[in-house]
Length: 574
Image 1: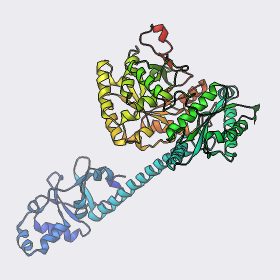
Image 2: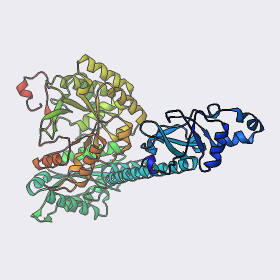
Image 3: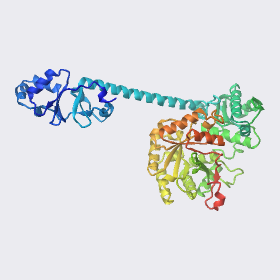
Image 4: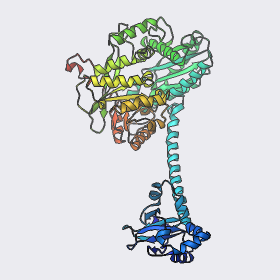
């Protein structure tokens, strides 16, 4: 809407040669006007006399005595407000810090050449302001409603798994944390399906989803299975209220038999195996993290030996979080730079070109019977306060990868690094030593780490981003996904968790949550990168829906990169 669409009036004006008598005649004649405009010889407005000012002058004995001898040039105010007739009220009022004088006098209107054409009296200015405020309020309400709807869609991911309706990882961790805080004795079970991926590859995702839904139903139907959850992919968990895993063992074995029984699908009868690890609170772990780690260790031992149910055993599960020997070995490996970077390519979907690599840590030749995975050694490095040394060592090795711009190296950031400004100084100093531009580095940060100390995280990351380092919000869709973070921190990319790719899509459609997340990234001007791509049809669908980047086994598995090896030996990494 423009001012020409409002209740403006072609009020007459007085020339600069007018005198007091003309002002009196003006207000006696123009009873609806709240101002008397004064124009120069070319009809440009040079001032005004407001109705309020005029009434004050005639109400004062002194004013009545001296004003008849004055000209309008002596009576007028030059601090009037004018606007183009073609201008919008929103634009005019937005550039004003105070509208009080408009509500006392009015607004002068001019044509494109600046010549006076009329104006809005004080009452109509007030009405116009109300209309502007109403439109602004309606716009804000629409934006709030849109934001709330997006937040609502994201919150549906926060507690329940869309496919199975079980708790998701975030909700399960929260509930186990509450049980631990209440000092209740209970057993935590982690379930990993065996032979699920081959079944999924052979029969397709629809059959795989049918299997996952049926297993979820069997867990829910068992009386001792409390807080059943799907932690992601083909991994489940639940709680059983027993004083020890030994007492829970026969009941959990019955659950194992139930979930590994045959399942009727459109492809016929199918079956999967399962490995279940048990750990007891507080004996096997006195915190939520330690307890889940212990159950996971027992599960992996069972998986390595053919499946079944295993109870956590400190002697057998040698990489337990309390193992002093393991801590010593990890500390020594950090000092000797024995941890190596494994690089997984990040693909630009539009061109199919490699635009970067995610740098993942591996511990080859660890000296243990089985090389520990990151989930076992990284928490120890964090606890020992050696994350900066570990991070810089991987950066120094990965930085020797000979690639051309705009290839980036993406690293995950730990809790201790986000809470210490020393990390940003150390990293910037090392980038300078390596002659590595800041835009070659991308830091991946998960939401639950940021929420620990958002102010300190902003301080650390803003300093790095100011020096060209880019910032990616990692694991989006795993249950946190607070949109406020995208406004509070200088993110340039959102990494969509692989779980979003497995939420009910087909070979011709993407899951709705993933499609909505990609649209959100596009609307916010953020690069979207989907993780866990394993099939060509997934890559094609992501490209068709406007996803910018992707990574996963379809494009390449993480491969060890050895800076000292011949280039041919590193071909898989680059």
